[in-house]
Length: 411
Image (cartoon, rainbow, N blue to C red; front, top):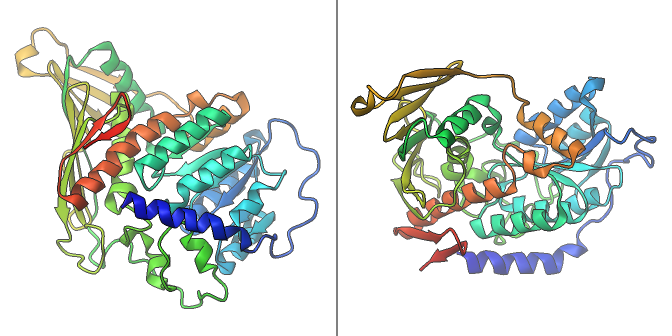
């Protein structure tokens, strides 16, 4: 699987230089006059779905002078989305992300492409001197996450992975309590992301106007295997292994990242997964997915996701030898284990205000403090290892083992 991916990436890099290299739709020759040094000018790469939402959030923020941020450029392979996005931000528009990275008016980028493009664009952006907000998952494969982390270390750019829930204060309150030892030795934790979509999740509407004449299919495929133009693959890419890890990368990355934020992120030591297509038979990725992640600190995380039932799993729960931690609005609750009731007092800790994920990223850019990102490159990399190994465990039907010190798979 990795060899095929690497081969197609090399093929893409050899041929991609011949793709369209010009700005499109009449981007203005001068985008901005001189701007204050603390104004962060952002380009959004990929403006469908989540990317469109991020763009409109940035446009909204730009109307508040106190936010000191402005969306100045957009990029997408489909003309329709690109034109709509350009009208929204009144900035430059590019079909090829590399031309956006050459734009000196862009300080930072939001990457909201399909998963298989995250690594390449993140690394290219950092090499071009741009700070990066990359939507989750960090990458498609864990080896790519390692490369992105190393590139961030080399360039010292600010990298934030877009699992927005990791900026919730209750996770950081829990982290402090766990680090202090209030739960005792960690034993096991649980998290879940459950949906029930009768029509099949990710079966998004298909716009029949999209075609190879107005959508650069070759550029969209990029490092993925070459296939004929497919509206289903384009609009519903999460159903296909070439571009996505399904529930693992779309849903579980969120809750595993949040739980690991509370635990203190670790590389996994052992990962095993099971599941299947219990209802949605038309897709490659499973609609039900269960994962056990063992950590070198001798504790286990059970992560569960399904698209076919939304019955509760009890939420995120972290269990130690002395006490159990739950998240109950508006804070964190610690309940002693029965055997420790005389020694451990039940507690409730309220949350306090904390910057949201985008605000946190923008603050880190202005302070040049990549280590203060709520989901920085190293943490996102650690989580990506667990997520990708869960996919490989499922697809290869075996237990995956990882050396956290050497950061290598154990055969």
